[in-house]
Image (cartoon, rainbow, N blue to C red; front, top):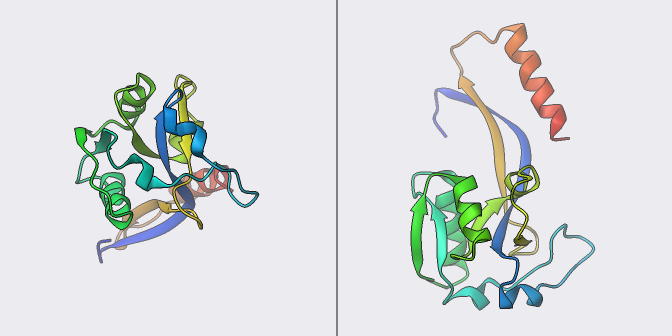
Length: 153
């Protein structure tokens, strides 16, 4: 967060573990009524290859923090800035990754990926609108923010 910017939270998205559909550990997830996705123990994946977003991206930073919090350091075989590319590599069986729920749910081309909650309560990341505090917010920009916000409610 930068002090010159104003942030509005549009939604909190769940940060999920993404694994290839046929991954042998995918059967170990357990469903709970309070979670949208099955819960899986991240420690099971300590030797599995991971494809992560770049360290400069919020999702890449969160992925590294989640792995550290779980006490594991799996091999990171690739870093990328492309979240869709990351999901395609997971789908092709190259490794596991992390993704926010909307990237997975709104990408119809990704079909062979299983997603799991990694903690209870869920790990979330804020989806934000950021703007300079010093700038005038036009009625059109305000309406746009309202429309986008309503899509996440």
